[in-house]
Each structure stands twice: as C-alpha cells, then as structure tokens.
Image 1: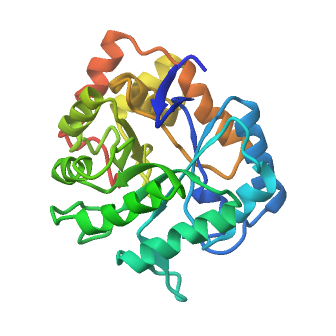
Image 2: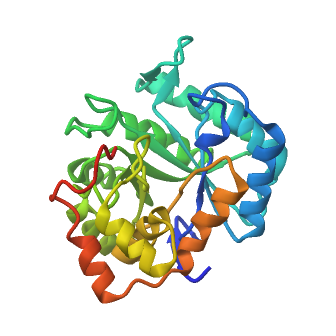
Length: 292
C-alpha cells in the first residue's frame, strides 16, 4: 500500500487498516446479516495487505470476535486491536463498563473469543457525557488495572479511546501508550493539537468515524475535489486523513467487498497542494452537514 506504514506497539502496520464493527448485524447486534459476505470481506482485506484490524468484544456482542477467530485465526502477520470499557444491554443499548472488575472481565472475554494467549493492543475506551465527548476525569485506577494485566502477559500493548491529552499524559506515567483512538475527520478536527503531540511521542492516532460516522460527510468542496480526481468523496476524505499526519492509521469499516476495495484504493490517491488547501478550508464554514 502506497500510504506506507507506522509502528503500532512493536510492529509496523500498513496505515490503511480495517474496522470490523460493521460485520455484526444491524445496530452492531447479533451475527452478520450475510455471513458469507462478512467472511469474504475479511479475507479480501487481508489479501489486499491490511494487517491492522480493529474490533471489540462488545460488537455483537461477541459475534465479531468469534467471526475473526473463525476466519483469521491464528492471525499470522496481523495486529488485532480491541477495546474494553463498555458492554451491551439486552435492549441493544451501549453501556459504560468502567469498573476494574468489568475491565478485567472484558479482557478475559476478548482472550477467549479471539482465542489468543495475549491481546496485541487493548484500548481503554472511555465514556464521555454523550458517549463520544471526552472528559477530563482521572483514569489512573482503570489504566493501572490494564497495566497490571500487561505485566501478567495477557496484553502486549495499551492504548486509549475517546480520550483527552491530559488523560494520555496521565496514562504515560503508568505504562506506555501505543495508540489513541478518537473521533476525527474533515468535519470534526478538535484533536489537531493532540495529533501533533502524539506524533512527537511516536504514538499512533486512529480516527474513528473517519467518514463522518452514521451521517456521512457532505460538502460541495469535497465533492468537487473528488470529481477532479475521478474518486468518491469518501476516498478523498480518507486520503486527506492520510496526508494530515504520518502517525494517523485508518480503520474504515464496511460489510461489502466492493466498498472495502473503494476504501483501500484511497491509499493510492495523491492530493495536490491546491486540493489540500480547499479541503483544509472546509471546517468551520458549515459546508459539512450532520457529521458525527
């Protein structure tokens, strides 16, 4: 992949990865709607050079990790990143699960359902007021619990998700942090300073909702650049992220092989200085609608 690589933990991974959340059923609940298609997406991703896969045992719950195990185990050449800190209610709700016993239990669930002796990377997924907005509370007790599991050999590397710079700095006093996973895209750039700080530290930044989440990015400037490049707006949005900083790793998700190929092709796009200038100017002008 022409986007290059970046070291995640102790392994250089391709900067274009894959997020497995959409392999669960509707609402990230239950088994895949089309099992054969889900298996095909995973095989195609790996065959295309993807070696960084993002997952969680609360996707499904459990069903996505079970699918990864059945299709990709023993994960030769792959870095599988998971996250803990949440659970699913019987009503399909997303519920914080932040106590030390809950975090320990979640690690054990991931170990069992992925069928590994040690998890490559575990992100502590923090829970803000609205689920995604980071807050500034101390994470010491929670991160120390995961650091202890790392010392026991159950986790190789640690990361944070939905976090602030202050929390990253607090975590770094406890154990190494190899990645941060926060919301960031053309429309939502509140983490610009954090990305630069992490780059200085050699820490990967992994944007979730790189395409705008449940309400895809919409912008006349984005569409114009895409037209000029004979690309889709989503491909240009991904290419912009790759240009933003060398420590950014992408994990766009899909349950379609065709869509997967489109996403991966974004790594081949070259954005001119003029294209980048026009894309950089999008934020703050109200030209992107309903981006989450």
